[in-house]
Length: 130
Image 1: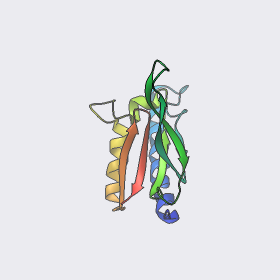
Image 2: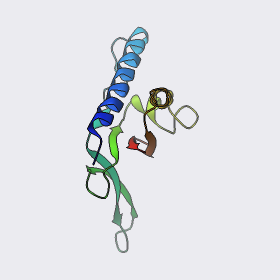
Image 3: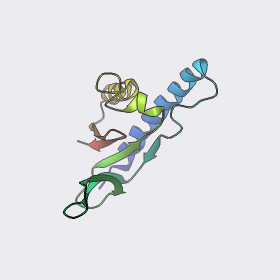
């Protein structure tokens, strides 16, 4: 079962960081919020669903956000992002990881929380209990 206290602490750290980044960004451009499309999902994890295949002309895997269950119950938080937030959070940005995500990792380490942050795809990362 997900540790609700740990999940709340992880979310608190991330939300505080986003608030700080929003404030810093206002000095540059007061009319935009680079994290407007950023969403935080609790009690969820990400999986891939196989789509297409023989006779469909395409085949691949579609990422989706699903509820935690008995098999996958150590995901504390899923963060999805789009728009300008992609430049700050995606592993494809800023030399393999967005600078806000780097700051978030550092704060989690400084707080000595038993968690791991893993990028699930270009537009989402998950924080898992170790």
